[in-house]
Image 1: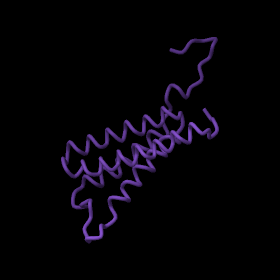
Image 2: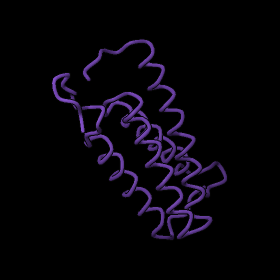
Image 3: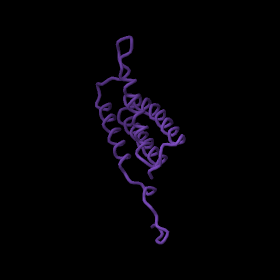
Image 4: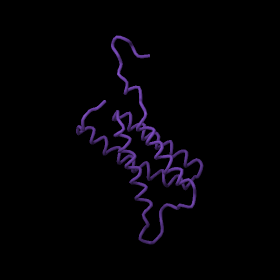
Length: 127
C-alpha cells in the first residue's frame, strides 16, 4: 500500500502523535511506580499503540508518528523543572528497559509484514 498523503492520513498521523504523547507520558510514570508490573504494562501499551498505528495506516508511517509522540513525551518529562529537580528518576533500570524496549518495539512493528500487506489473488483464495 503506497498511498499518498491525504488529509485523512495526515489527521491520523496527528492523532497517533497525540496518542503517543499520552501513552508515553503515562508509561514513564507507571514504570517507576510499580516496577516489574508497571514496566510490562507500559511496554504492552506501547505494543498496542505501535501495532494499531501500523494496522490503521497500513505502513510504517503510523508507527513512526506514534513513536515520535512517545519520544516527545520522554523529552518533556526528562527536562529539569524550575525547582531544579526531575520528574523522572534515573536511579532504576526500568527507565532504560522502557526506553530501549519501546524503541525495539517501534522498529519491530514498523518493519513487520501483516496479512493486509499481501496481495490476494482472485484465482486462488487466500489461506
